[in-house]
Length: 335
Image (cartoon, rainbow, N blue to C red; front, top):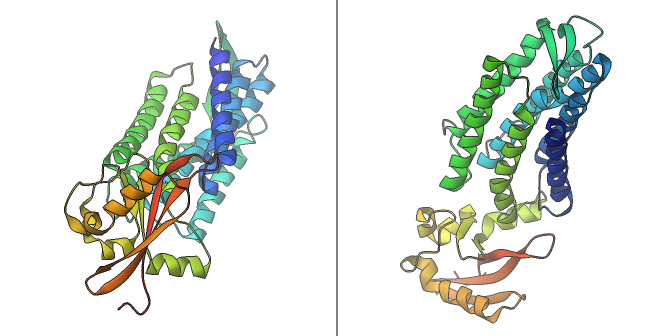
């Protein structure tokens, strides 16, 4: 039964990974790597549960440590991406290098005393587990794990000023997954459980983390060439989902419509007040009623400025409608 649970966990992780690389929209390399690590580690837990001798168990354990060593760091990196806390490239390189170095010592299990001094295979009914005596480098692994757990709490607590707006629901969800993951890990070590719960916890955390990541990827603009960057700076963009909830905007949109700063993310568009309701609500509703896929464009004058708006549909890779994008730009010569 336990082996089947680990196999099911592996299948779920693989399904998530396949979704991200085939149907998902705009996932970063760190987001995909996090799920990849969970897939490999989940496979290791299944392999350990079916091990029949110590060499098999040690090989499975080396796969399992991929989760323990890399997942906390990648959770931290992904949370930083959500909150738009920038990690310099050189620092990210060092972080990966240190974790790979620790994993290098994991690969010495069974050949040296650096990570494990000794290991013994045990069975208790259907449960297969190892009795271990840790070596000095295992301490480095534990320190790195608690360090990234602490950094997760530090970033999410708002000590570092956030530059990306996310909904209160998503903030609470991220905080919950962080504390729950840390609590389960500590409880496992204190109680000395024979059953490992971490693959299920990390999968739950990944699924929970995918919710804000998917929304941010869907209702955002990304680009790396100079033309796209210059357009994003000069034009306003407003994102609205298909339930007519405000999903965010860029800084330029705040300049055109200051009331957007007061709008709560993932809440229905306010029914009255502000420039948006004066100039854009009716064109948006008209576009939705027509149910046309073509861009809907028009102009309006605001404070002696002539502005152009375009309304279009946001679709994901499977061509399913996710919401609407409104683009606002000044008309040259209208100043």
